[in-house]
Structure formats: structure tokens, C-alpha cells
Image 1: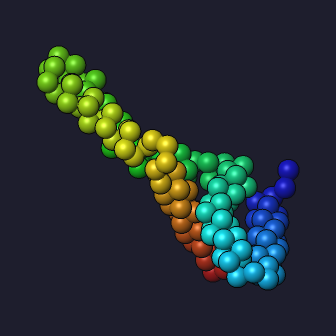
Image 2 (image 1 turned 90 degrees about the vertical axis):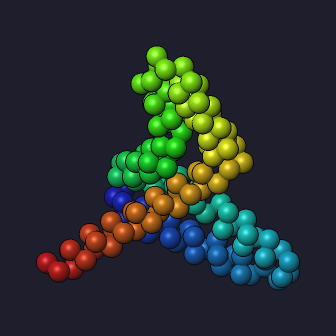
Length: 135
């Protein structure tokens, strides 16, 4: 199995080759379209490459749990307050409405989770590099 640094270097090399291909397109309209597609697909490619690292998987799971708390907390309150029917119904309604609005298909929730995962991992890598550099 390749080390994380080798995977990251390979990913950056593929990324730079893809950018060079886009820059070489002669038509400005097609080039702009390719850049838009590249920027929309990049977070998912990054996650696919980096999710193999267990640290990234843990960071992604934590970010997903924290950001989706507006869904599972009302459900949890509804289960805890099972005897009080108005509270239970309203909490299940709030949880379901948030689920449909925020976690449903076509929402930016997953992209936000991936973006935060990228940011947190970059911060961890920066701190780790700084600590290694100081030694």
C-alpha cells in the first residue's frame, strides 16, 4: 500500500496534468466550461482519493455528524419525549423538514461536508508539518 505522501503527490501530478489540458483548449467557451466542470468535480475526486486514509474518513464522519445534527437532534428529542405527544410530533416534523430541505438530493450539503473536511485536513497537515519543521 502506498504511503499518504505518495498518494498525495500522485494526485497533485494528475491534477496539474488536467489543468494543463484545460489551459491548452483553444476555444475560450469550451475552456471556461471545462474549468467549471473541473471545479465542480474536484471535491469529489479529492474525497475519493483521500478517503482511503483513515484519518480523512474519521474527519469526514465527524463533520457529517456535526453538520447533520439539525436532523438527528430533533429526532432524538422526539424519541426522548415519547409520552408528550405534541412535542414528539413537532420534533419529528422539524427533523423531517430539515431532512428534506438540507440532506435531500440536489442540496449542497455533501459539498459543504467535503469542503470542511478538506479544510480541517489541511489545517492538521499544516500543524503536523510545523511540528516536524520545529524538531
